[in-house]
Image (cartoon, rainbow, N blue to C red; front, side):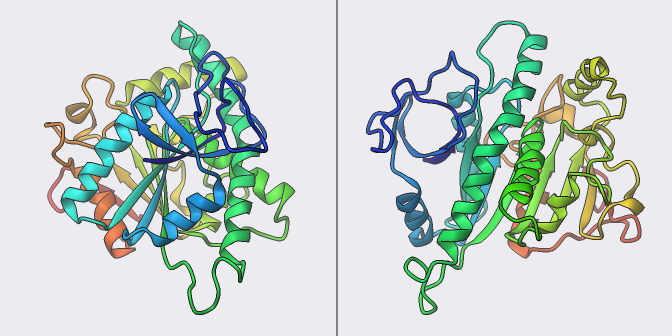
Length: 327
């Protein structure tokens, strides 16, 4: 499994590639650089470098790529397990359609969920510098006549999925990319962006807010939310410490759809989230009631990947309800 990380290794061999890349799990500070790696088996990884990774992605038989940014309090092997589940579900639906590549940022390894939450918020913000460089590197590679000549361009469709606090990583990454690399505007690089159980304020996608950049970089932006997501309920309480009283995007959907860009859609997952992830109702976008069998939220994501279109139940409000007739 290919993966990208801003998490520091126990031994840094830069500028040489690290043939035996081992995560330093006691260090949750993100580096300013990123590492392109391969997971060989559980607990064994190698660094392959960005050029080799991009070349491998280009030549892969998969039609599309889905970049997967995990949420808070997830150590690398847990991320790989979740990504393997998502990849398996994709392969069951259509073999060689979607290649899933996780982006791993440094979550805390301390005990105590509240301490982890605040440390992980800091790590999410710090990771933005590394991942902004990652996007810039990708654009330079894609536009290079040496790697993508006119007669042999990279035609892979790129998509993004961010879960929970991974949405904060995505929002801050695009903000940094815009500020330090492309102040004139960000390119449209994603066909679809899926924001699942997003742990950011529910005004984030409104015009004029930092999260608006997410809609600039993607053809479609789909927000999946559930009002009884217990993890986000706890997040709202925790964020009162910073006088941030707004509801979370993954709890209520966008605060006002009329203030969001036209390519943003909202999907209510209240009917299924706690059935698929009991009792928290937070990780409801992979398997359904039986592990290894796709849930309705996954089905919605995959159909959007296949078609490149979102078909809302309510076209005026750009909204759907998963689990009800027609949802």
